[in-house]
Length: 290
Image (tube, rainbow, N blue to C red; front, side, top):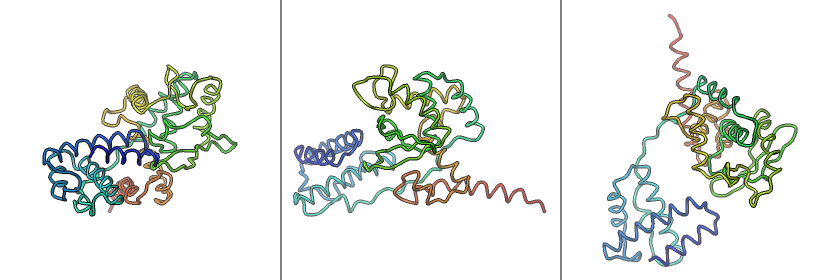
């Protein structure tokens, strides 16, 4: 069984899945193998009820449960495509219905506080790095994984601003436009970064000149949010991405344009931000005096 998992992982690597995703798949599949071994079964002998019971026994949140099922479904499809099993038993198992929460975003007041903290950052390598990263999140809606994978050569500057060549989810390349204000800080940082001769060409680097990773970015953003006095439940880069989409929605930008800018695969994902407009409409109705 381990051999089939190994082949599956190699297939993911060939498809350029991220290291984080591959690690998650590998971890989940080894946990599933341990479960099947306790039942005394092989992949060829498992059925939908084995998968159902495994998912149920995990006793985890619905969203996490669905992620585990998605991994097993993908793996079983891999086995089926190669003739190792005749049917995909996981395909018959239904995903749990997840109640969608409204995205958390920064208010206008919080954005003003954040702006003041960013203005106080020094114009050295680290200060410019911090400013640029936060501004990129708010003005482009980049994901953390997309930001940390940017290389120096992925930044193209012109009179209109900047254009980033970004590797999106699923590893396809996309162009992301940066407004002029954010470009000013990005250009300053890029100028300092280009003067450094390092063994790698990643755009954003740590104090030790290593490429920033996801945990570095989370700590960086959390520290800036703390300085700005932003409440704890909102501390994270994903909040800045949600803020970008919310600003666009409030500005009456077409939901289809927002979907494109956010790089959402499904329109239903973008529709989560409609509650912002609905709240504004409710306030408008309340103002009617009769």
